[in-house]
Length: 538
Image (cartoon, rainbow, N blue to C red; front, side, top):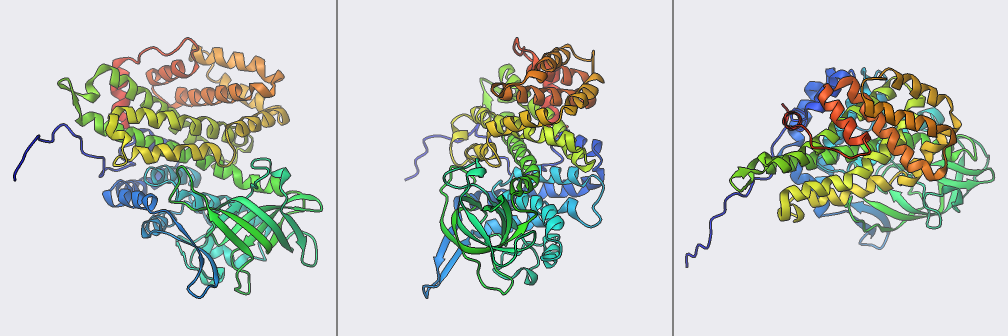
């Protein structure tokens, strides 16, 4: 029988072939402005490859077929290995080839290497976020290992600094590439790592670089298949940081027992585990009792990557929504031409303009070793951008309607992925309390802000008013103020960057949207036209 009940029309094609870099005008401009123009050609090539259907399908497959824990082999020997879908390995090869784990740490790094890496990170985040976890931890660990274990593990540095991904279960000196994970939290403490009970006792001698036996557990052990992990454990002097290789120098398996893999809301392509240390061997990094400070050196980089990753996923959500809106017709007009929809999409594009400008400026400050500025604004951007991701993707879903809520769309996966960056490396309250701590410990930071923001005095009244209000509050900050103050700092920093580098209409509109307590008026139609054109690469 040949029954025809209807014809399929007015159903947009999915966004499956685009150049993720060339279609993002704010990112292209920021790369040039912050000194990484030399990488533009490669970024365009990476953007073309990542925006293709094959890469997007690899991202989907890696999440549809999450990793499996293999506890035993056929003979009953304990394995504790994690098996991944081939799509995971394909994505990991691309990430390592693009040096997301080590570009700024090369012996002769290029100029603005942090800026170039940040741009590459944003592009990869739009395809699959789980694979970024092992890369960001490795990136954060390399400076720490170089500083504290340069001799003991010198044979690790060459593969750590390579552009190869090597998933084989072999000793470090036999591999072409290595990855580093981390394990801090325990069941009873979570963020409160000072309550950790895992204990470490020296094999022979105490002190930096010496071997210890670790007994205890980790509630979240990120990327258990990594070649080594940085972990916290308690010694006589307090919480200390240790380097735990998966395989010991003699090639035997370290006593790290994987109890199970976490069944997570999102981030499903990536493995997170619960483990036990049964007298596992680890090497002390730095002095006993100094572990939190050392692990936070690593955390300063991974926190920035949380913000970069969330931004990249928000950018992808807007791209999907825009592509749909340009094709879908409602009441005789394309959805993108409907005045109210244009306001929604325009506000989203404006939000991303500010994020792009501030994140790339932060990367530039890392390149310039602006330690105080980075120390303050790293938790600021992590809090504000990661927190903004969830409602942003939900709004993009509404643009698509019901089809955006179904798994055939990318948006449900993006939505499930969003909360992890707000939680990992410190949830919102932790970030805000960190901001408060920095402001209290470094009074000179207010002078730095005064000097930077004074350059813009009189440029925008919303900016001037909010900065005066915050100035009055800074000397008498209370813990209960931390969220509001962190939000203000983000809005002021993002606005100040747009006031410096953006067109006046764009910067003024963002200042009103983010700093005017009376609420946001509709964006001028001409500005919406410009924002949407820039969001599409024009």
